[in-house]
Length: 493
Image 1 (cartoon, rainbow, N blue to C red):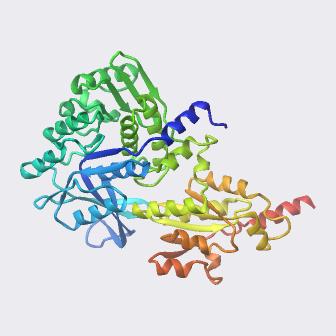
Image 2: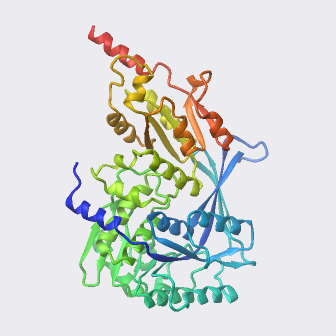
């Protein structure tokens, strides 16, 4: 499918967004993932025994919103509260690693850093433990936040309010943020929480989802007429000129004060995990509106970006290149998966900064069969993203795979692999082995089929010396390209 002229225009708009300073104000959360196994029941009580293996830390709450902005190319800063504790120090470091300005962080020694620990067995969450205070900030802590917002001239163009109900966004803080953005001719956008939206009065945009809009307005949203009623009520409560309600798989509804309205359909082509999609939407919307992009185009671009996020496991901050690839030269999501070596290095760095586990495997994948699909899905289960190194045609031929190999050219083999949900990235390489590519991306996990047990896995020493692991994935018996080729030849006799 060829890309339309309107898609070209959207891509041009998004690709040319200038570096813009945006302040994210809200609840800062440290997400900890404890990985392990939960395969037996405790003899002491009817609970699972969790065998801890490792943990990893990610940016959560308003921090993930800021990470989305930074990944898109905006200059993001965060204003929020952390404790004088190990969690606060770790959160600050993660923010700085993600190229997010931390100068506006406020430290409260009497308040713990909000931390959510999720115990995960493979990809299934078995328990979550929250460490936090939900009390509204006050006293010296609130005054320090207000002082930062009352600077004139205000150092940021626009403000994004990210409310997770942890007490950071008091009425005074919200109003100070609105006045600060106005002083720069910028916008204030809020991702709301709770039922009392009167505290957001004066913001330019807010982005409740269907359930949040129902709770705030008292209108049960079933059809279009209900959306109109909810939108009118949102305008009355908050004073926004245009009401926006996100509808998940059904897209985004917006209605202007003159009653004109539209539902922009979702751009998600595959959905793996909806976690963090709301953060992506509000980030793109704020960035675009801060750069004077029309509301409708901003929402459409936000939908494209959310389509990248929901195709990933866990929260994800899509890069500008990923969003542009989704809009695409061909309109095909697969084109965003096939990377050059340089792009693969950038993706690997992005994953490390986000605390994600990158799994790498490689092969020719000439005639894809059920064994390949099972193998790739198993490999993907060891991390958050699967990168497949793919031999070029010349590389396959040098391996003496047989006359006429590969049967399918590199472009076709890459397209088929990229169409698989288990595969996040495909990286062609022309060397005889993937060693150089493995060293370039340094994955957390190197996966190979168990038939390589006695052959020596290329890249093992490099990966293990950098703290990674090598896994040998079980194969489906009787499934191989050689068998498929032989059957074809037998039929032709």
